[in-house]
Length: 180
Length: 168
Image 1 (cartoon, helix red, strand yellow):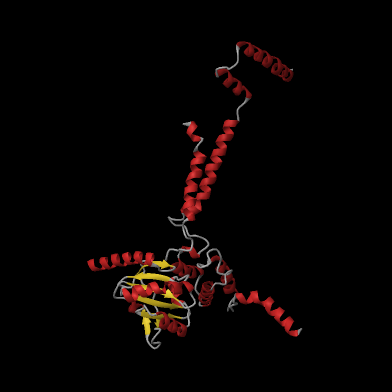
Image 2: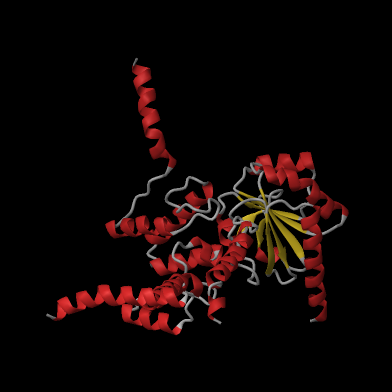
């Protein structure tokens, strides 16, 4: 028994080593959203194409959809735009755009140039809605259920791999909605 | 020359321009603001307080803290506002929850364990010469009988002298 006691420090060291090694593979930039399973924050903001029209959180309800936070100043947004076009225009998934801290004029030009995958685009020029959402870096992509509740957040580029994951989650959320 | 010195002045002023200044209606509000922006962590820049960062998000958060202080909200309310949006990450002092207890008590537990280990080792080392002798006698001797006899003779001669000295 005493003999084995000698190995205690080694065991503790190995235990901590495994624990800390795991930490190396965690991306510290990925933060859990504080808004999961909470309703989308209330807002009243203009639409990008019809500045006279005000959009509110009720405009995001009705079906399981994606909400993509983007801006023309954000390089990763440009990289993921093609993927969003495939999701929105080819697969026909509803994507809402949140144009975050951007110039609406530039945003319209951008969508004219690179195509527009968004069903609706909300203009959040001063970033107040972004703040309520806990946005800390564009692009961010949220999954909303039919009741407008935030179910998932992805921070960073949406590529094919991320989309397959999001797609699975959206299908699961849509399925549970059908059961109710 | 005149332009040169003006440029120099502008360059000196540049760091001050990076962080905006706010006016406060009360001195207490300003003090609370200064404390608050040091305790809130900037979510985009990972390891900076929002007071240290010139990231646009940090500026937004400072603006919100200023707004809420001016509108008369309490520190707790402002903190809750931030945590509701950005999670516990935004606060440099993590709250005590089932997930964070190890952060709070881990070091203390390690300290106690270490102290116990040191205590144990120290106690085992604290053995009087008499006990050593007793232990040695119990152990099977690796010495030959002749050597044993010589050792006993040596042991008898030296320590007994000192013992006699102390006695007298």
